[in-house]
Length: 452
Image 1 (cartoon, rainbow, N blue to C red):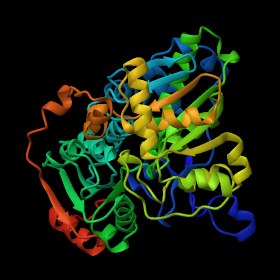
Image 2: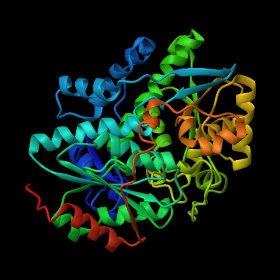
Image 3: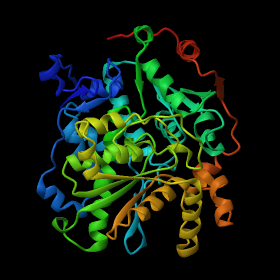
Image 4: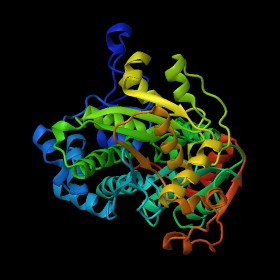
């Protein structure tokens, strides 16, 4: 399997005479971002065979993940992949029914109580496998609007050959989100940036594209700009479909699923589009955003206009220039009409988010986090009267400041949060300046020359 850059796709070859630079999976994973600043895309999406999809309702999560992984990863023995997958995904992924046509796929039963655990845990094991094999060291740069940083920090914590630099926006994430990444130390360096998420993301991209820095140290990304993060996120789309087949008691050939995806940087939705390319029978995707509704606006107008993100109670989705939109454009050949056939989008206000949390709790007793509430609200706006699976991205306890006043109830802290609540913060407050961040990276790690 070969990968190319979204800045130089194969479609340009005939019209512009460019030489297409392909890399293998290992390079795409460890490099993170293409040398020209583009995002890596596979030259094709492997198709799962019909028998696999026919029998999918009987399969365990790791078995589904293994079958998908083998289509992309050719240089790791199957027994090693199996070991990594079973170790990474050692938690449940339940599908719960909210009402007759609305289901929630809970993706927050991992160690940091957020869906980002899927990508971070598998990617950490993949990277560690290659680095140990090649006796290399690596620096991970990750920008976060909340949950990515904690998942990556926890996933890579304690690995001696990998150092992680987490860039997060000052005073724009919850206290518990900050505790999950900024209290670890060791190989995790937390940098609190004076700015918003888009500033953090821009800094990360500038650092990853810095040729001088890359001559001194090995650099990669753990954001969803890294294809290694997206691949494991495609797994749960298949598993959610498998569970829905069991709940509806229908055969696979009788069901096309509808997924509603709370979206910020749009890695999660891109992973769903990948799943469909691999053969998952998806009828419709619903892109659910908060007030930062860049992609729903694009779907309405055909014009992509990035803007400074605004602060909302669903802070992990506060993104004004979603990186993975480049991959979405590539998958639909830049044609908004094609994209509209597969994706509809809705923006949801904080008022609507609170109303959704309140109404669902009053009617069912189920407590939503703000991001999942955005998904529920968007699903209802769609007026689709068929079963919809809403991806539930985080445990509500991580956002208790926003949720508790709405439901007039204290949310019990799960063990993962109880053990960190009193830990001391170990973060460095930094200016929104790439030279400052570069200097800190070099001071914290030293001038490590590449060995390869």
